[in-house]
Length: 374
Image 1 (tube, one colour):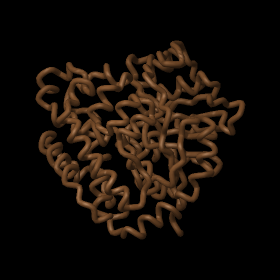
Image 2 (cartoon, rainbow, N blue to C red):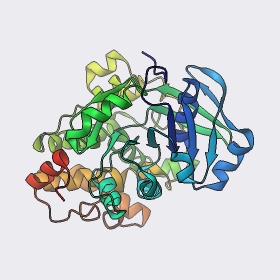
Image 3 (cartoon, rainbow, N blue to C red):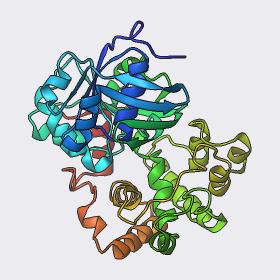
Image 4 (cartoon, rainbow, N blue to C red):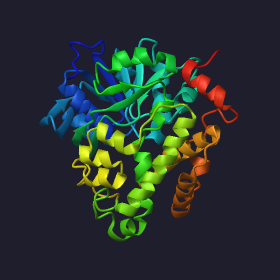
């Protein structure tokens, strides 16, 4: 099934973010016929695209050039007339993008964050900007395995076959799902944004793999294949341990999720045989799309700087709320903080930072489903 503006209530899409995910979304959705408006606050990212008038791409659906109707640093102009406002960026930039969009967001627009997985951060920011009853939706992962490989070119290695989708509040999930599915048919409806937090795949495997290869990264500048060479059987066992803790926390909170290997397989990133083993090592070693991806060139990468404070820390916070111990995750947060000379717990996405430091388990689950009552 292919999305098309001919059969969708969405004709114009404002995309916030001009990195690998944003440019890939602009290229892919532009080739499908949607009217794309690309917004960024980074002049260096925008300038070459503005000069060209679009983005070159190489992808499973072909190689070519996708013209973009508007490429701008004006959020209001980008959002004007858009039925879908799509934020495509790393988690640590969500606050910036949502703050830029909030003053111009209308009730008939759907705010869609892909990937989301920042739990209650977005509603908290929207309320700070005067939106008393915020509504938005998100997926757990990017729609693409992709990179911006040149100033005017992106590479899409894979378009995802499966994306966990949820809304806030949960009672609004179905309405927004009916809209987003006409743009991304691979979205699968889950209950709410708690259920999009747990399938955040990068947080499950990036920090363990990087921590086990820190010497290799520093000595070689990342000159090895991150997934194929860096995830050995023992590294895979560490990833599996993180995954078991993540699933235990989800189950304690009544959130539907699945083991990482199952998720990876559903997304189309590994083989049936790997899925049957249920082992992370096999999932990566039998992953053709991931096989040739090189390691980060330094430790200052999103593999630690995003996936620990906006991934592992959220799992730890939810474990605390649910009364479930997370010893492996706790140690990864500690080791990453020591290695990077940072306090990821102090700077990361805690419930307190989201404005809900004193919330109880029952209050938290009710808020996710019903939203705010003021």
